[in-house]
Image (cartoon, rainbow over all chains, first blue to last red; front, side, top):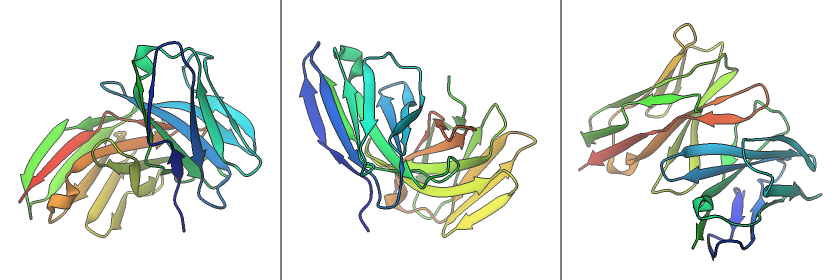
Length: 113
Length: 110
């Protein structure tokens, strides 16, 4: 069974541009979570989608947004990129219960120049 | 702010030795999970222990949970070079959001 997949694996953008990151959950998982892992800051929760709706978001500005599609895949959009947005962005999926184990994808490494 | 704090920050051992790392957290939890991350890639789920459990085993891994002390420990027995990675504990809040600690870097030398 395929795990969580993310694309692209690497993304290089310049300041002010927009970035779109994609995630496909494990089959049967309806919840998708996004985390940011920036150097020196650890893993920070970004967004949680379930059944197509945003259920919770972390302490990030509105230029971080996303959506979940009917097939439960998800996009994370980062507008007006800033240098400090450079990080590894990890997507995780879980079964439809908030206490279930989250399984992570390999991540997208975003570099903002 | 991070919910979990791992100790030590880094650990270097030789193959065959045991590695122990600890995690402390601040608020009440429903469960606590341990993850492994190799070289800044995705996290691999190792084990989940629920708040009503005290100890759990999975292969060479042993996890304990002491809710009265708000702490957990991960023991890797008979370590191998392939165990070299960063290990994170994460607690799940009532919203299902994972809150991670800063991690323990483990280096296992042959």
